[in-house]
Picture 1 (cartoon, rainbow, N blue to C red):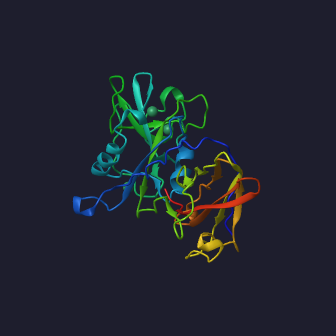
Picture 2 (cartoon, helix red, strand yellow; picture 1 turned 90 degrees about the vertical axis):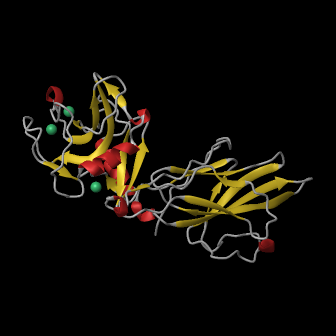
Picture 3 (cartoon, rainbow, N blue to C red; picture 1 turned 90 degrees about the horizontal axis):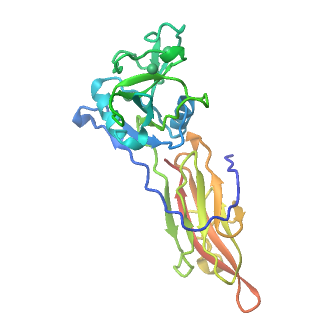
Length: 303
Ligand SMILES: [Ca+2]
Ligand SMILES: [Ca+2]
Ligand SMILES: [Ca+2]
């Protein structure tokens, strides 16, 4: 059985729902391979091994530009200053799916491989690369531009894995998908339409992120909660006037006011998984406490 770790937060309900992650298709009708690509930004930096695991969690793999045309296609996704970091006289771009299976320290050109096992033939090394710069263990592939400050290029560099905290932080990676993974989504449900629309997805349920569901309390609210069902009822249940839209036979609860947080595991087996959320509020109206059902949410775990 799948398990979600639960937590509760009290953040203000001011978070915007992020746009669904953009996939760029490279259709065969345009000379492409039919695959889908996605640039992922990590502003605080990410190591190659972390990026490889994150790409797998999304149902894809670190991009493998095995031809000049594919390399050009992949580069256009990250031809943007936010994905690059200055290092000396170079500008370093996102990670790709190449790595060295062995380098004795003096063979920087030898034994390169793709994470997919595809043959290593096409290369696009920047001038002087790969170079095991300054004797460092540089066995992992990423983009690099040697030139004016803030330049960008589809040329490649061998870089350190980045697990060393003293190394510069590469700010992202490109994921390649053979087939498109499901997009994370969150849809409002409201049964007969009489419940307050005060239960929202503050963020979308993206694998490997913390999902935030918000409920809006008011001056009379003593307590709010959301109920989650991992095996959602396909139709509203005939309970409490037809407004309770969750399967009470299989649910768990996130109690507390405000935003409720729930880590979505970094695991591709969650992709496409459906969750129904039911918002609940306990209001003190003129003395006695009253249960107020809020709207429900239909969510799909995706990227
Ligand atoms: Ca590829
Ligand atoms: Ca090397
Ligand atoms: Ca290098």
